Every structure is written in structure tokens, then in C-alpha cells.
Length: 197
Image 1 (cartoon, helix red, strand yellow):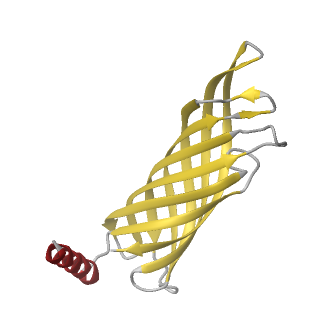
Image 2 (spheres, helix red, strand yellow):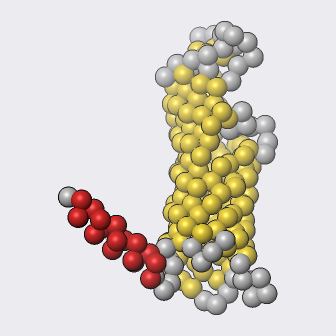
């Protein structure tokens, strides 16, 4: 078993180190919310992604970007509030990554896609019970950013991520059903690291 694991590790490492055209990359980001809306009071957040580049010229690479994120939030103005929310994001996108001839380590990028935002609420806030509520919303997603190559494999990146979220829900407040239907812009800044292979 140890030989099989060692052999698998060596083959995988050899493929990564000898790849001529690095079509794949993985990344890990920490997102910051820039406005007072969804995700603004998060107590924990992470954003992970994988990219595949399927078209390349000297100046641009086109590809698919699959990002997933998690945000944990507990809010409340007093000790009686027990509200907690867990939010999961799934963000498939098409992206373009550009080469800058006079600055070969810098790579501007732009992406367009759709975000699915799934929420799971529990507890109460200001006397309103949110126990075991969940739902999913979605909306258009746009991002723009830049990466900097530390080496041929590792890079740092900074991205601005905008989600035009369409929120639809139904809540009960004082025994009255209230339909919720509104649009919300979520602006986030992501700082992260990545690895190409």
C-alpha cells in the first residue's frame, strides 16, 4: 500500500512538474464584503476555485472557472439574539486572462457567469424566529481582477466580484405572510493564492 501511494505521488508530481501548457489552476481566496448587505457581518468566509483554460493565444486565455464559497454569520444586538446563517455559493463563469507583454508576471482577468446562493438560517433576532429556514437565490455574476506570478506555478491574485442577486422568499411575521421579492447587489473583494498545473 505504501509503495502504491509513493508511486502515485511520484507520477502525479512528475506530470505537474513537466506539463508544458498549464491548463488547470486551483485557488483559495478570502472574500471581504464591501457594502452593508448580504455577507456584511460574516464571522468566517472562504472561497475555493478551479479553472480550466481551453483556448490560448499570445495575448489571451479563455476558460471555465468554478468557484465555491462558504460564509458563516451570527448577528444580533443583544444577548437574547441567537440568529446564525450559513451561506453557500456556487459560481460557474467563463473567464478571459490576459498577458501583458511589458509586464509578463501580471495577468489581468475578467469573468462573467451566474451565482447560486443557498442560505440556511437558525435562531432568532429581535424576537423573530428563523429556525430551520433555508432557501436558494441566484443572479448574474461579474468579476475583474489581476494576478501576479510568484513563480511559473504559484501566483497571488486580487479580484472584485459583483453579484446581482434576485431574492425571492416568503416569511411569516406576526401570523401574517409576507412575500419578499427584490434585487440586491453584493460587492466583494477577494484576496488569494493559486497554483497552476
